[in-house]
Image 1 (cartoon, rainbow, N blue to C red):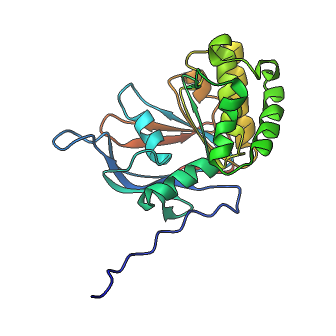
Image 2: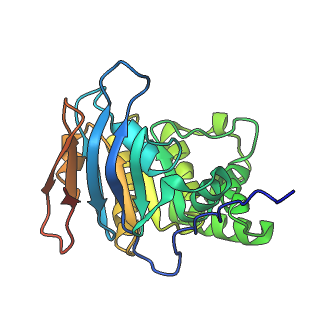
Length: 252
């Protein structure tokens, strides 16, 4: 009896270049049949080396688009594109590998494991990406020193302030020096000083050539971004350049 043929797995997006072109190709997403799509036929390319703000009213799909771009959920139709290839068509294990090795996440709530130490929380992302424990610890300590939480290494998340917890979340996101960072309302629960630390970390990482995408309601932060992608009520998007950046958001 002949063996069934299996299609080869799609190749992972390349990881040799610092810049990453991330976007969508005729992407539509709906939570179930019979209701209007949250995102409707969106084709969009986001630049590397820049901070792009995702904006729009509550319920317009900012977080949904962020999670689609990060390959955490699949589109209803169309594609999420990384480096010109359909990353949303990758197998689950490949998408997980890409996220572990090339993506950093920062959320409104730091989402730290309350049962583990600060340094252990930070190191998790590196261990998932294949770093040795020694490498992860060394890198974590460098980042904790950079963001002023090195003295909290052995504390638990419940023993530090909200601002410190978000600095720890930044350390975790930056541990693997990812090519892409996705942030969902990362300053929403912070005082002005802590928010400035978080925002500057995102700007600095974009300056290395990385792609940084931030969902936010904060217009002051939007005006400090390079680009704005605004989600519209009909599931589409509009874009504008905020600063005199050399790149561009491409929309079709």
